[in-house]
Length: 242
Image 1 (cartoon, helix red, strand yellow):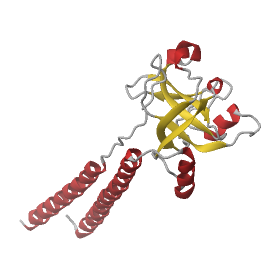
Image 2: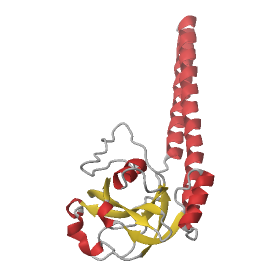
Image 3: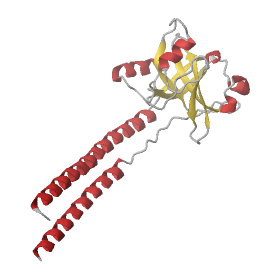
Image 4: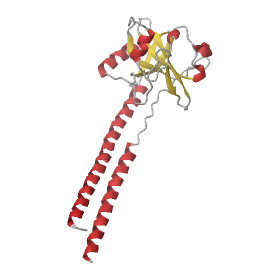
């Protein structure tokens, strides 16, 4: 191998090695970030539920109080249900039923009551589960979602939602902005509902965390590149000398 060729090979190997090490370090940073999120979710969701008023204060202070446990009492406006397309924890396609709940003080919070299969979207198919009296709802605070590149547009007229557009849902429920809706959702926990639907407790608390495996993969590739480079160069040098 000529000296210029060896220099080019070495430069390429160094660049490749540096990129692989950087990717491994980046995954370690992501691991630390994900572990903080998981710890925060566990801590918040396992604490004693706070009142809706307290949840509003916490969310205003933290700007994102996701997964804080909340308990609220009020009455559902069942005629204003909105339907968010979802896949259940069991892998079934259907809808999350999102219903405004009004407290005695006049506060309105949108409650994600849980999942219903496609055939139970129509409230008439689950009429026994439409609470008319004052109810107590315990659940987790969740912030509005943002659409990604693959999210279909929400169809307001057809009442088909594919992202948690709290503003859009609120305006469709209360035209004219006459009602001040709390700036977060409440995902209801698992409770017994007459007829079985909607089925609460759909919050996904277990986040995938494979960043350590990814980091080890990048570091392994970097080590392999180094070994291949050393073996190749050594073979080239010793072959030239013989």
